[in-house]
Amino acid sequence: MAPERMWSAYKEFCHIRERALMTGSCDLTGLHRVCPTVLLPLVDFLRRTEVPWIPPNDGALSECISAAVQEQLRIVHDGPTYDQVVKLPRGHQELTGSLAAFSRRHDWGSEYGGRNALMYLIGELVHNVYDHSDSSNSYLMAHRDDCGKDMELAVFDDGVTMAGSLRRSGIVVEDDVLAIAMAMNGLSSKGEGRRGYGLRSNVRMCVQGLRGSVLAVSGGGAIEFRAFEEGRDDVQEGYELNGNVYRLAGTLVSVRIPFQKKGVNIYDFV
Image (cartoon, rainbow, N blue to C red; front, side, top):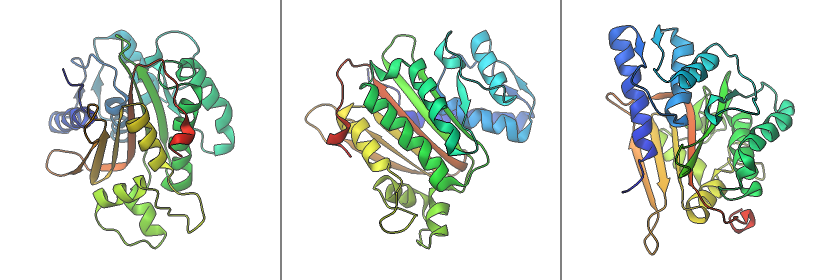
């Protein structure tokens, strides 16, 4: 059975949001799974709109969402992994300790490519927020599913989007899907010779090295990169966000890595 697409998870968030706007309250009683691709934009929606919400029947999941909405966020070193929605500090100087504690909580990626791969992955995703997004709020979350089949990691920010960042630097791009593709291929909004998005190496490492998938949603576009079975080309699919699929006020990048004991050499992909 093929794994669920992360694009489907983002559409689940859109359906929750749409129902909440139609009814005037956000009923989460039927939400029973932990999925960063759903939870991070959901937390942002609940915080910004202050719409009344009905908690999930799952008590731990309810506590996770409540703490995130109320911004009672901290690194906890025991208990289930999904109580962790981490708000990133305003200044990147405060990052080091937070990211180390976060990585230690997830066993340094020992079952998902190894310590170097996990730290590189998280570091690049988080630093892109500080380098490009101009956001007021940004969040990090990871969850290993109950069956131990995969780990999903997501970073969300409420900033200017990938297309907005490129336009600010003088790069004319009107199409959000194209902007994501350009950023994912290493185009820098910081000028020639400056640090770019750094996402190209992450995509290659996750898809080619770890046989996982990456979803980027930004503004009115989305692209999902995923590994196909051995011997066939990897897949890249783009989506225009319209109709009942919410145009995201910011950027969400999610990564899903299947369980594996083997380590990955990051220098094969950077």
